[in-house]
Image 1 (cartoon, rainbow, N blue to C red):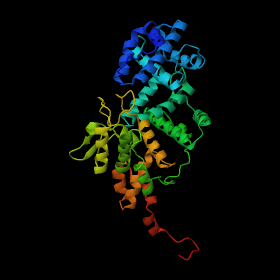
Image 2 (image 1 turned 120 degrees about the vertical axis):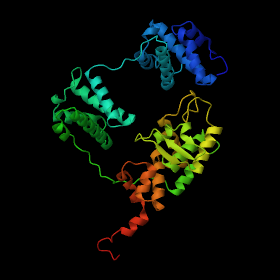
Image 3 (image 1 turned 45 degrees about the horizontal axis):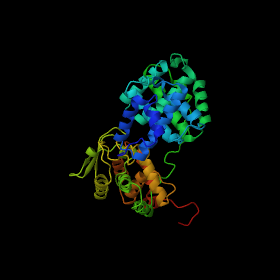
Image 4 (image 1 turned 90 degrees about the vertical axis):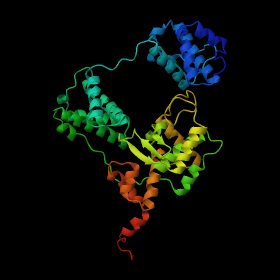
Length: 417
């Protein structure tokens, strides 16, 4: 952002003479830190100016701005306003610009920080979260999913009242599950709800609550173990994926490095997302995974092709940033790491370019396992490479070893062979 972002006299007047004038320097500094282009900075400031103009019309003081105000602006003013230009009507862009405003207002103590939830249910969820983290060692994503489900369950029964598990009846379990499945009636949602309820009631059992009748009321969704085949890529599809990175592909070196980590090392999307520069030992040719799904520290060899892809990305394409994460944003704000959804989006785009409709990020991991099995590796070796805690998790890959399966197949009844 080398030029002045105030190219519009209207925006300048709205910001420097309006209710947000005191935070404009901080907002501009935030845009500069994120290395927004001049046009992107002008867009953000135009949105901010429009919001300041609306605040003036509503006589809304700056210390009263919060999420509800932003939501009202987005829902009830933006679609129908006849304000003078510049006016950006893209909801996503407007929401992002005003979210930054709220962050700055809280950093400067103009508006109060969001208070932590209080009350019996909030305290119960806080204790349960501590149990899941400290006693069970569950990852943050798993804990968040469980807390969302259990939060809805407790609100349905104990809203505004103390949480007394002894007051629950099996019918309460049935009613909650039915209500949730009326919203999303899928087998995966049923399994997630059942798992969350079982885990929570198991925790309450350790607290001395009688939960056996409640556990018996949780139906187990039908799930046939090892019923499906892992969807790995064929050798021809792998070639199409690797050859899809051309000179016109956006951030092609970053995308190629991400794909190689999945294909060559079987890294999960979240493990790629959490990989830091200090995790790569270039001299020894290894990678250390410190933030894995199972919360262990794993050491993996770094194949030559994978290392070369990482080196090329880091030296020739990675933006200058203080971030230690390997994979960072290539659009403003540049000083942020890629999110796990961004990693998955990169892989989805690769599969789309390669014409593979069934691909997702985990397909790269499946591809590595299938390749190992078909080259004669044992299930134990696959489990070690994929870092599975249990051999049972890796057993599904036995079904893709067609040569070994043909050797143990029995003749079809009534056939001659």
